[in-house]
Amino acid sequence: MKQKISSLAFIPKFKVAYCLPQYWPIWLGVVLLYLLLFLPPSWVNLLARKLGNKIYTSNGKQRQFVETNLKLCFSELSQEQLDVLARDHFTSQARSMLHYGLFLLGPKWLLNKRIQFVGQEQIQSRLEAGQRVILLTSHTVGLEAAVTGITMHYPATGPFKEIKNPLVNYLVGKSRTRFNAIVYTREAGLRPIIKDVRNGYVMVYLADEDLGEDAAVFVPFFGVPKATIAVLGRLAKSCRADVLPCVSCYDEITNRYVIQVLPALENFPQGDVQQDALAMNRAIEATVRICPQQYFWTLRFFKTRPPGEERFY
Picture 1: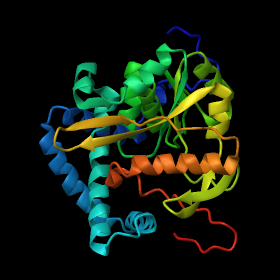
Picture 2: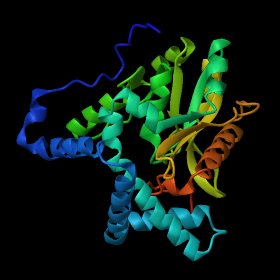
Picture 3: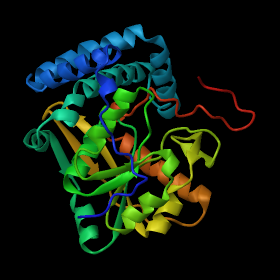
Picture 4: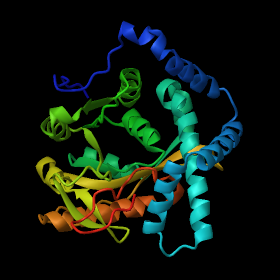
């Protein structure tokens, strides 16, 4: 698909300043991540377990966020089960860090070998019928695999949250736009994204972070009131798009990231902000339960509380 890229799109550009000594540790990290591509996956898994355990035992702040989130969302589990989930999460998080070189620099043949699509026909059939598609993703440790796998197969569009470090921002931007993708920063707004979707692009949309009370409503997420961005319903209506939940999970047996596309949300949007936000959160819950240890539990998903409620973190 050929389309003139909007002037509002974020296009990562290399700057000579990125060669300054202050950025050398980041470039060294990139080299190390590239070298990891040549190691057997089982070795990387072993390294991830050791690194994850180190983070678990040494970073009390992150561990507290993870343990609090897990206890809130899985109150039916025993303390022993919650502890296992927490440790497994840090292993999953460490592994995703070690795999970043794959998505930034890995050749396409290797990416095809390491990323598997399940339910892809749900996207394909809709696009062939002229129907627009929004993929509702979430912050799992396999997010980069999902973005890479989707953009390898379909022209995609979506928002891009900029990173403070300029070089890291450039590298992540290059990774996200490596294949057929257009991304926009918050300043660009949603209009260019809606235009792209109407022109046949697949929107990759994340809406599970707690971004404060602005444009948010409080609806349950795993039974806990959560400040939820209530935009998806309006996006689906404006784009005349079906919303398909999507999640990427790493399978340590096959050493693949498996992108799973779930059935589209039914009767969505309903036009009621609260009900649409609730339907979205329930869809995200369903994706989280597929590989709960791989959800990004270090984020403060319940940072903003309803008036009068005690803070969790």
